[in-house]
Image 1 (cartoon, one colour):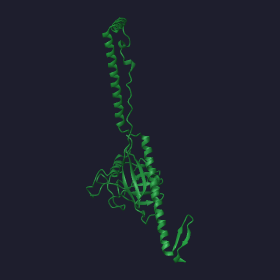
Image 2 (spheres, helix red, strand yellow):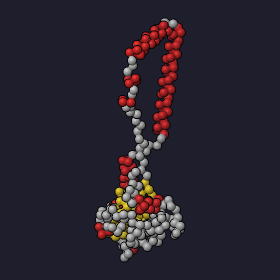
Image 3 (cartoon, one colour):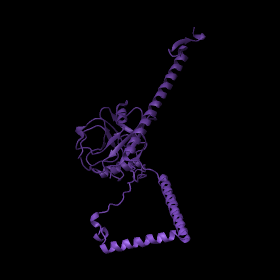
Image 4 (tube, rainbow, N blue to C red):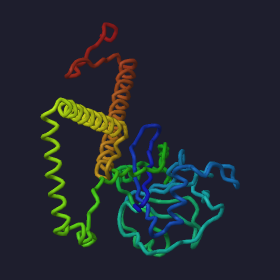
Length: 324
């Protein structure tokens, strides 16, 4: 069974940044992975302790350090001092089999041994000084450039981004596999009995006689009107059988066309890449529009104060009659 994959759609100051997709190491740390997966889907509902949704949606990145990591997951206090697991209490470190030795690793944040809750961080570079202290439970498979972009944003004295970075939406991705192709059963030649492979001489003789009598009957029927009628009936019945078979095949094809085609793993990865490129293009377009609006506002303010208006491609100065 493949490892689960979840996604975060990030926003900064209300503008979309893009999607980050994680692979979770369920085969290595299942308890840690199940906690993160359920918080990404929000399937556990409200917490009985804090009456807060056990859900990463709307959660902020409360800590960002350039060339190190970004940290989030505090959906109770939103400042790095809170957080809650789906188990109702902090849970143990499952193992430290994986080192924090690469960028794009998904790691549990904690306040000491066996204090895991919901906070996590994503690395921007290898962090060997954290080996044996924090559980690595996933990796970024798409969107590491967005993680790096967040880590480079301006922050305050507490390493909190000046522009709020929010998990706008999140959830689990479903891998849809193509149905297995139908194969004809393979007949083992050893399983065929000797009787079915070859008939005895006596049986062969009787078959020959029966075939001879059958041909004689056909010749006698063809010489009589009754034989001609029966021959026409046989032809009609064959045509009917062929029509039925053709109708059945067309119905089967219609049924196959109605069934939704499931995408393969290669198509699944291609779709994720295409969606990611579309989100990046939308983000860039929004940024360009925002810059354009800011430039127009600046020009308008300058015109109001100095009376100078820029026009044309070369932005030549034009002065109104009141400014001469």
